[in-house]
Length: 310
Image 1 (cartoon, rainbow, N blue to C red):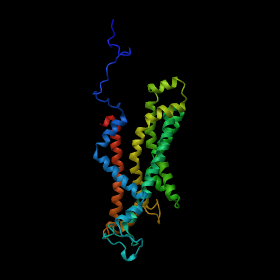
Image 2: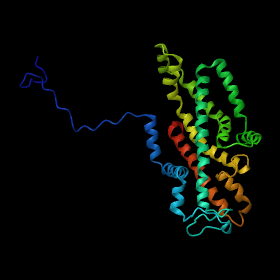
Image 3: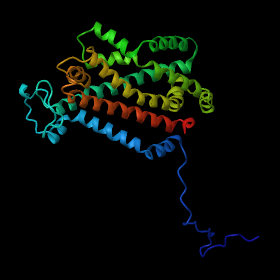
């Protein structure tokens, strides 16, 4: 029989040339890539990211905005107290006659720090407790589940108010710890349910049969496949924490003067709203835009990662 590929001049077989006109193969499909395709096609996602980036920039470099949009000389004069917006001072003045744009911009830092720090701390606690409860089950699951139910039954703002009133001299760090202690239960329940659904998967059983230790099973096989829904819930939680922090400041049990925050500004402005509405309008606008952006972004990410909502 003759070879289907004749020998070349040197005796080697000549193989057919590769088809260079063949279309390139698409990358393998994955949930993350599919979710990203959906997210970047939604204008609301880009709008939310722009707002969050702007607020983050004001929190990181407040002086940049005051230098660009005001002719503020850094002095506060009582003669200008509560005056409305003017040229060079687009937000007007506060009760002490200080530029109100500078105060509102500086008020973004504690709110954003609290939202991110509380969410990160609660996420860490939730991942650890949910992973242990869902993976081991038995008395570990029972103990952690009862503790989660007790924490879930505590009202977030009311519980924080009671604790903070008992310790009147506190700062942002103490308030962050209190909010973390009250805000981990929901994410823990989500994490536990995801771990229970994943731990009996075929790839986890195969790794267990090869002699993998429980710690390796949890960290290398269960955690990466169970943590995505918890991260989505955490993104939704940032807006809730920011609004909760502002509520505590507004009620007078959160940050105290001379600290600057949106909640404190709203607390001060409520008595002057009818005569000087700009004192309440601008911090309320910044707070509402920030909270709404985090919530809408979290909703979009949840819809993209949940096939049932597509």
